[in-house]
Image 1 (cartoon, rainbow, N blue to C red):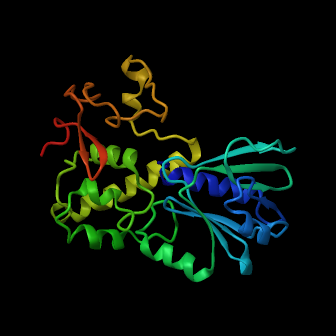
Image 2 (cartoon, helix red, strand yellow):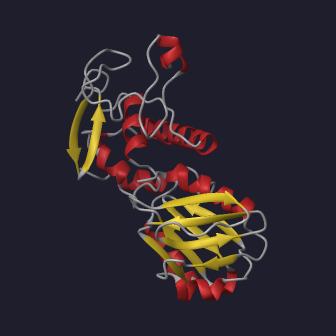
Length: 269
């Protein structure tokens, strides 16, 4: 599932390419046809992201809410448009580019109250300037749930996914099994600041890189990571491989139906 930096990157791209002018909206697949008919030819006011949610605001006409889920993707291309390929839920076309949305979990036209309700259910997003990290701390500091599970709970913290969860805990030497209430406030402040920095880097680069310069392949004389997710990481999807710092094999288990990775040497229980 795409993490928050991907949605913020898309929001910035769509703001730059489509917002501020009339856009053509269609649904070649047909599942969004009625809503697309209301928006076709109208002005897209703005595009923004909150956590793993993307919002296209059309003012009084409503807001298109997109959640990509596990399989959703946007494909971008310069004009002219080509014939739709596959099951295109929504096509958006502006002055210079067009984009096709395929396979989202949600693609719906909402009124302002419905948009506010979605945002109200989400925890603070490290990539938003209006984020209030103390809201997340209030939940974490009272919870017996593991910090690994809390970081993935979108009602606690919005936008953090499996990669950022595993990597930020490693970077701060925290066992993923530590209950939230046992976490020190200063440690949480450091985690939040690190997430802000790492995720902003992810927006700029379009991939997740979490290793320090001294642990990059060229510095360590090792082969670059080969993975469809891209980026250089410490533990994510490195189960059984030696830790880049201490050499301990990276551990793996399932937690709340998601894969969890950590180094038992650098993140002792």
